[in-house]
Amino acid sequence: MRKLALKSLIEVGNRLDRLGTSRDVLLEVINAVVAARAECTENDPAGSRGWRGWQMGTRRNRELHGQIDGWEKDDTDQIASVVNRGLGIKIIVCNTDEGTCVEGLTPQNRSKKGAATERVVDRNQYTFFDKLDVPHPDSVVVPMRDAAGRLPALHARLMEVLQAHHPRHEVIYVDDRSTDHTWSM
Image (cartoon, rainbow, N blue to C red; front, side, top):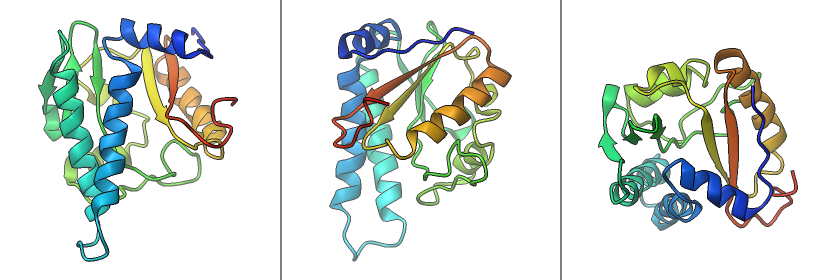
């Protein structure tokens, strides 16, 4: 198993470039999620923030990656994503809570999105990569913002799953201007 710690923005940028994407593209997807959630009001139906964030994040993911050579829209098994089959990479926007990848907690959708997403979340990342129509991952990209409190548990759980099921891997954390000490973690 290869461990890769990228500490500088240049290292992260170079690695994401080799994965066929960029920090700017991923941050724009995250910003679409955040903006869509923020535009909802108390007059919207319950679950609107989560659903709208997922919808707009998925749309932006497809718009941006669709302009990059090798990427295409994918809906395999009713899971909305973009895929680069040549690189064996799939990017999915999933709007789950802090129970994701934390032992003892059950991840939940922030809003109900349908049976396909529920199946992915229910697997709690153990067989998630097997469900994707791409080879086993060598790289997992985790966007973060103000995640210092959750990052150690997330990292430990992610390492446990990847080491057990995908021994050849790297994890790339992308920090989106955190105001806590996320980047120093």
